[in-house]
Amino acid sequence: MVGCDDLTEIERKCRSALHDMRDQWNAEVKKGDPTGALNYYDKTTHYSYELMWWHSLVEDQGPLAYVVALHLALQNGFKDSLDFGSGVGSGSVLFSKHGFSITLADVSSTLLDFSRRRLQARGIPATFIDLKTTELPAGKYDLITAMDVFEHIAEPEKAVEPIARTLRPGGILFGRFSAEPDVDHPSHITYDFGPTFKRLAELGLHECWRDEWLWGHQAFRKSGG
Image (cartoon, rainbow, N blue to C red; front, side, top):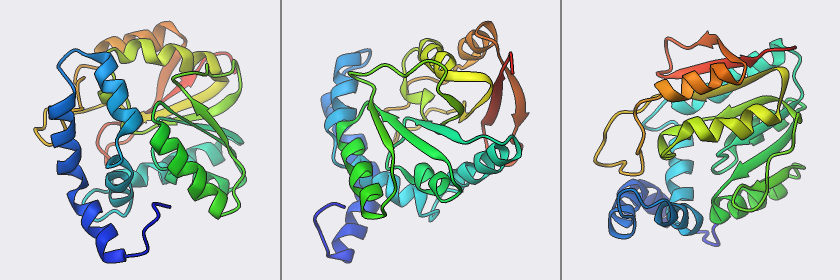
């Protein structure tokens, strides 16, 4: 996926990626600069290594939330899924193996390219949406996952508006809505999700599930189904 067959070198890059990302963010992104932040996500090459290491479950059980979301989707008979802020496409690999049609949406060209190569190598059909240039289609999906996304957005209460439009009535948004200040994650810029929850309620999405084990994960069902 990254043009390197040296597993030792790949592991080294995975292990150093978190601090490499931190240093790049601190060097290139000024506080309150949305353009700088977008350019960072669009161009950084460290993120794919950091996310693949995260999904390896070496240091964090958070990625298991995708399994929880899958069970919730299967219980509701859902079939059309969107991963908003799709990263390296791990959630889409999982959902595709259970018969879902999958769409990956992200602002990062490098991550979308990585995911495209990853899924093509496995023969997995998918739709890819570059959120910098393409709007989400209306009423398309019955499940939307958004894992560890909203803390990276300055105004997540605005980001949930296109998500609500593309979610079908009765559909579910599943994500993590929680973050704490961390010097190793300067790209985490939002910690108060009160305005986001308020906007979700205004858009007809109400909490239907909360995970007491995997910190911060919640599900919101859109009314009308």
